[in-house]
Length: 153
Image (cartoon, rainbow, N blue to C red; front, side, top):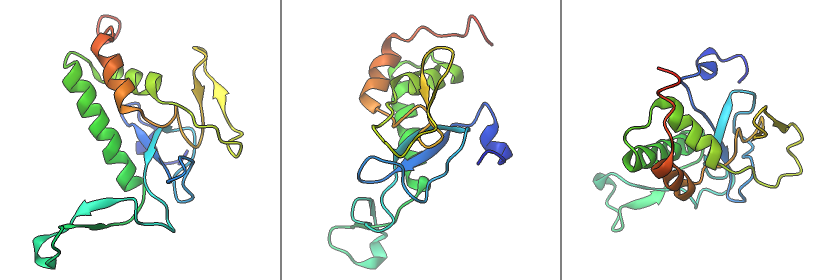
């Protein structure tokens, strides 16, 4: 992931995936560009990710198991970003990144030795970025977040 150009853009929020146990999923990306993580399912247990099925499949409940991946984790974070912007539409893109970083939590993972603290004493991991997103905490923080638009255009 460190060598994938688009993922290193400051406008990109690269998302890793965690499994049902809340820890880094075996298929998920790792590296310095990982910004945050979200549930993406387990490769060996598909029963925790559900989606609506097309009506032509004729299922009575219209739901079914779909699969796993960071392709499922990233839309969850996009949904959190939408909730953050609904709570405070005055936030700019840097503010949104700040809210997600400040409210995500690194899980207890003994298998994640590459953690570091940045200059602001905020933890970062090659597996989780700033941590697993917390929608409730992000929305609460967004309501009172002081925008940085005065400092940066």
